[in-house]
Image: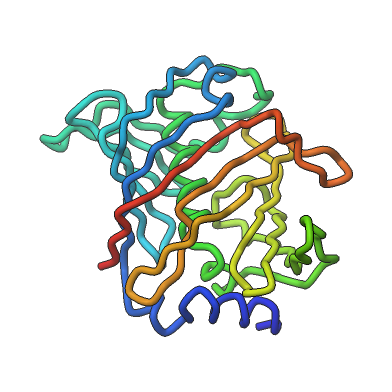
Length: 239
């Protein structure tokens, strides 16, 4: 493990604490302009997000209407009713985004898949970067006001569903994550910057509570007048 990643993982609580848990649950409230571009309504109602820490699985509840939740894995997305019956299901869900651009409308399964892989990636960072199959290296730092944020580029293994196969992560002087850059392949490959803030400590693990995602210029400058997605997380619980 390269020193930058080792230091970042330690600053967030360390692998020993992380590996002592199996799942993470949080309350999530989402907003931003992306949903309208996708032909979707986005309310400000709180929902429950659950992820597995050591395999790529996630769910959000309620989804669509009360009494429904999602089941996400890279190979399958489904909407499940409280009584267990499958409301809707899609195998090989990534293929359903072929030829999509930023304004291509999504159906509920598109949205559920996007939500599943995105939140799983966010909520397991930086610990997932130490998993088998990730290739990481340090890149040029980013100057943000008076601070210099050290950069790390990660190449994701093929079996992990995420925004793009290559993503950049920036860490502040305290080694906590500040910024996350990627391209959203499932929506025309547009470049995005995610600002990460408001860290909270839960069972000795530090995780951000606030995420704001913007379009990004090719010179890496975020377009701060274009808020694509907002994510506020609270009530974190490990088990």
